[in-house]
Structure formats: C-alpha cells, structure tokens
Image (cartoon, rainbow, N blue to C red; front, side, top):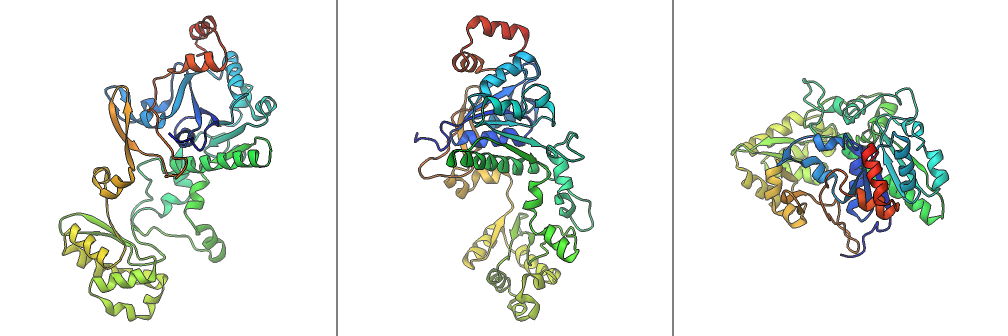
Length: 398
C-alpha cells in the first residue's frame, strides 16, 4: 500500500454514539493510528446498537474498523493516569462526555496541554461547551429537531419529520474530521500548538440547510414544509412509473427545466413569462408536476431513465440498499466494498469516503473484540509488564 495521507497521526477515540467515533473512523480510513478506548465492563454502546449476525454487532463492525480496541476506565484515578500517558504522545483526542466530565477526571484541556502542547482535543457534544443548554444530555435527534431540518421535512399537511437514520451525527462526524485536520494543519504548518475544537451537534445542520437564516433575517420568511418540492425551482419531485417504481427529477438549471418540459410533451410552458426563473416555476409547481407525472406514469422505469438520458435531463431512480448493491455506477466506484472479518468472513460495507490519487484510503480490518489490543497498546506503547497488566485487569481498570 502507498503511504497513507495521515500516517504518523495518532488519534485517541474516547467518544460514543455516533459523531465522534465516526469522525475517528474517517481519520483511520486515511491512515491515522486510531486507538479506541472503551469502558472495561460496558464497552462501546454501538456494540449493542442495531442488528447483529452470528453474535457480531454490525454497527461496531463498521464503526470500529481500522481502530485498535482497548479498555480503560477513565473515571478511576489509575485509568486517568494511563490515559494521560497515552495522550502525552498522541496528536488528537476525540471525546463526547458532558462538559466538565474530563475536567473532573483530571483530563481537561489545561492538564492535557501541559503534558502535550501539540494535542488537538475535539469535544463533540449536543449543545457545545458553553451556553444555557451545555449541561443537557443530547443526541442527533435533538439536533435534527432544533436545527430547522424537521420543520421543513414532510408533506405540507403532515407533521414535522425526523430522518430514520443518524443524519445530524453523520454530518457532525464529517465536520469534526475536517475540524481536526484544520487544527493539525495550523499546528504543523505554522509550528503552532494544539487547540480545542468545540463542536455542537446542533450547529452543522443549520449551515447545511442553506440560506434559511439569511432569508429570515432579510425578508422575515420562514420556510414551510413542501414535501418533495422545492421553493426554488420546479418541476422537482418524485414520480411513480408504470411498473410501480419511483424516480426523482430535478430542474435546478433553467436549461434542464426546458429539456424536461420538451421531453414530456409540453414545450408551450417554456414560453410563459413565469417559466424563466426557478421561483416562477416553483409558483406553478402544480401544473408542471401534473405534466411530468402523467408522462412518467405511462412508462416503465427503464424507458423513463433512458429517455431522460437521451434528453440530457436530470433524473434518478429512487433506490433502496439492494438497488445500490446492484447498480453498475456504484460497482465501478467500489462504493460498497468487501472487507474480511475474522468471524463473519467477507462483509460488505461503505468504502472510504473519497478517492485520492497518491495516498488512497484503505480499510485494513473490521471492528475488533473489546480489549483485543490491550496487551499491544499497554505493553508496547506504555511499557507495562505482564504483572502490571494482570493487576490492572484484576482491579477492573482495563
């Protein structure tokens, strides 16, 4: 394998469910040396989250990939001492304990930066390290509710809708990984020091939702629920085919909107004054949707996608995961790749996030059993002898 992009970067992953650990997974995919800390008795919650196969937790199999698995009770004095030893040589700590917890254990940034001024500490919590809600427990669902996402998701006459997956956690994981790399770049480019990254999970979705804040500030408008429609252009919706499949159509570009309406047999609308802008088309979404829906309903999925492709108009089938597995484009990209697991054998999971020409990412192994790397880490990195390891196990520290 070529030298990995993050080779030589040591990351201590002390976070749980799900933003922090996924950020560490992303860093590990590109070569960071990731050490995952789990509580000796409880383990990481992802080991009990979601389905298992032959006793192997599938969430952990993916989330724990490329990580060395150790156990350590950070809340005990001896556990905190060992953590300080590990962190004195590390580059990154990712944690998501409630504000004040690390400080109570003697592992706060002030202590850690005295030991290791180069350490980047990423603190990933629901509400951030300050403010009136900082003390509250929270998960991604709260961020999806409070960010404005749920308020605009769903049908106009229906309730606010939450995503059936960890959207806020996933977006926050991407942001956290980017923030860590930004801090490392600043540290190493300028010969600077480490710093603290304070990431509140309620914030990234606010940015991802786009211009809502500016529209409200400048125009006093609050975006309503519009189902699958857009307030910015039309036609933009999902449409059922004759063979009972669904397709999504987008016309963000004016030229695409014109091609779609010619394709579906209604070029006359292109000459309407309101058709010249996305907002104007959105105001006439009922008319445009009816034309597109009627055309799509008379054709099978293959005919619809082939016709849109010939017309150079934007369409995509609505996929489930089985469709993703079978799609030739995803196959060509190796988006769902195969990794060998010691218990399950070959397993398929999402590949690394992006391709790099000189330092590609790589999945070396799946999530390992709890404490599988205790001896290697504590013996080889910290120099503990067998008697010390046995005593730590007996006392429950590891």
